[in-house]
Length: 427
Ligand code: AMP
Image 1 (cartoon, rainbow, N blue to C red):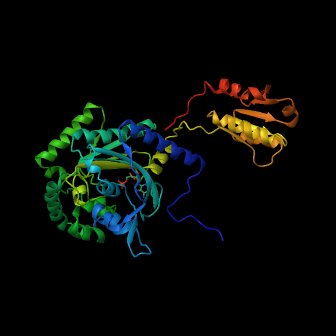
Image 2 (image 1 turned 90 degrees about the vertical axis):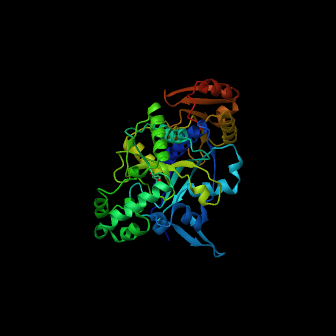
Image 3 (image 1 turned 30 degrees about the horizontal axis):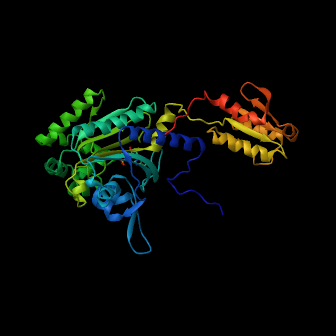
């Protein structure tokens, strides 16, 4: 019986895996540079965490969660996003007693039961940051700057940073009321889902992709008309700090994002190269979530980007990531010389040089072919005759030149040869 991979998931192998690893390493390097610390939370949590955190009325909670009962009868859910688990961990581990703000980053799989298409999967990877314990507008600017710098560092261009503010819960309440009133007049133009949303959680009508619903929203009230003085001032501060550091943005008053927890600053970074799934990442403030989870009043902000979409954009733009795809030394050892070859292989690896040998019982010719396929820049050839004389042959694969060398001289040769080696990007 042949097994097939579940719909909406993927195997990440070779080149794609190398790209993913490069992106993650680069992100982590940048996160550390900005003073963020790693956090790893479980892949599944109690279902209620997401119901309460993301919001009952959201598409994610209503339709997209992988929820199951474990053998003990508990309802668990594969995490659809990273913020609610981080907030839970923040409270459960007493991080509120650390110097605030606590700045965290994560990298991991998320799970959403969505209709798979290019850039939309049921299991996907996110890189994200969360800053808990500061309401400072400089923090908003820092996380946005970090997002933009990261994508720019990868070589992505024409990034469109969409910016909005959802206001605080007070602004949200009056906005919601006005939106409800507006939608009541449009009810017959809305899809069945939105008819329900218009009543229960009118903000979520903005998430609907149905054309009729989008059309019905033309002329709808916008959150910007409902900001209180504090929210308006905060947004002004964020914009002015971004202006100051040269981050350009597009004001998008219709940007609401798909989670209920957002307050104040919200943002999404898009690229024109990805068609329908054009959002690389996004986030915003969630100043009430910690309190919602039973903690002290703790303003917070974060974002997540989708690694697969970043890879897609990189490929779309034909960006060559500086990924090392070859090895430095291949040891071609013929029967009788393999023990010595294995010793040399390990001595070279100990020096931090990438090296490999044949484990497939190939002839010398076959081993040279393999070295070629692995794009080895040098091959050390060992045969019983050379071995008896304490010698080996060294072939420079790029120059096509071959020379004899004493085995005792190999480490000195390797030192000389690779001392000027360009240091690979290392996270
Ligand atoms: P969100 O957690 O919904 O704010 O999404 C943040 C980013 O995660 C998006 O901009 C995408 O890059 C990525 N993402 C969200 N959902 C999916 C999905 N189903 N498949 C692939 N990437 C996704």
